[in-house]
Image 1: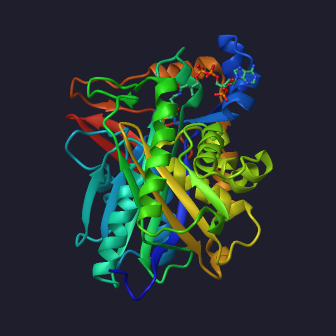
Image 2: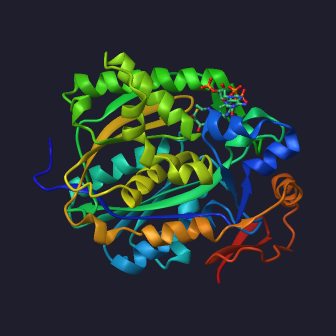
Image 3: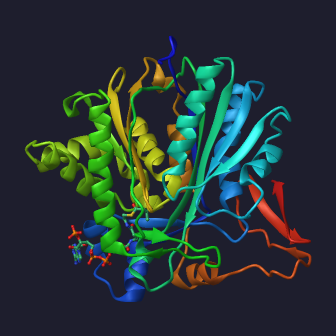
Length: 391
Ligand code: CAA
C-alpha cells in the first residue's frame, strides 16, 4: 500500500576522515603503474581516518549539521548502518545519540549486511514514516574500509559517513515503490569477528556484484518498476568507481540496449566524483554517489535516479528516487567539498603507522593523542569502554 504523501530524503550530509593517501604515493611504494589505479579502477586517493577517529566520530560529524538545521524533536529512530562495527553488542548509534544530544524518546539500532545495510536502514525508515508521518528517522551509514597491506584490495580502501534525515514531504528526494531485491549465499567478501581486515575474492566479488545487479533489476521490473529510459542517472555502490561503469554496462547489455560508452558516462559520470577521492566507504558509498550527483549536476528537479545497492555475501536492491523541486537550496555542496579539501595528505610511512595501529585490549586507561581537527574524537579507552568527546 502506498502512502498518500511523499516520503524520502529531507536532508543529507556527509563527512570523511582527517588524512588522505594518494594513489601516486601507493603506486610509488608498491611498484604498480599508477594508471592501473587512475584508469583501471578509477581511484585517485583514499581517506584515512586519524587514530582518534572512527565510525562514530565520522557519523557524528555527518549528522550534527542535520540536527542543527532541523532540530531533534521529531527524530524517533536512529538507524546506524556499518560493517566496521566497534562493539559486538552496543549500537554505535548510541554514542552518536549522546554526542548530538538526541532525545531519550528515540530507538537506536545498528544494522549489518556488508555494504548493503544503509539501504536496509533507508527502507526501514520509509516504513516507519509511513506508519506515522510526524516522525523522522535519522539514517546513518559510516564505515572504514580496511584490507591487508600489499593485497589487491588495499587500493580500494576509504572512509566516510553519511547522515540522511527521512521524513514525510521531503525537501530533497522522494523514494519510490517498488524495490527490486536479490539475495544469494556467496563468499565473495567477508570479515570474521577475529579479523580487523576484510577477506575478499576480488574477481569473484565483481561477478557476484554483476549477478546481483541482474537479479535486483529482474525483481524490480517484475514488480512493476520503471523502464531504464525513465532514469536520468544511476547511483551504484562504488567499491571503486570503475565498478559503477561495469555494472551499468552489464545492466544495459542484459536489457538488450546498445552499450554506448558516451551514454554510460552520461548516466554515471557525475556520481563518481566523491568516491574517486574518498575510496570505498562501504555502506555510505552508494549515498556518496548521490551526494556527488546532486552537488555537481545541473538542475535535476523532477528527474528520477536509479539506485543499486550491493552488499557482499550478498544482498542487493534496486530502487528509484525522484528529485523534489527546490532541492538545490537544501544541499550541502560547500560542506562536502570542504570535508574533502581539508584532509591532510600523508606519506606511506604515516599511512602504514595508522593502518597497523591497534588499541590495547587490557581494559586499562589509555588516552588517545589528539590528531583530528574534526568536531568529534575518540579521546581514550578505559575499562574496555570507548570515550568520545566533542571539540
Ligand atoms: N593501465 C590501465 N588499466 C590497467 C592497468 C594499467 N597499467 N593495469 C591494470 N589495469 C586495469 C585492468 O585491466 C582491470 O580493468 P578491467 O577490470 O576493466 O579489466 C583493472 O585495472 C584492475 O586490474 P586487475 O583486475 O588486474 O586488478 P587487481 O587484481 O589488483 O584487483 C580488484 C582489482 C579485484 C578490484 C581489487 O582491488 C579488490 O580485490 N578489491 C576489493 C574487492 C572489491 O572492491 N570488489 C568489488 C565488488 S564487491 C563489492 O562491491 C563489495 C565491497 O564494497 C567490497
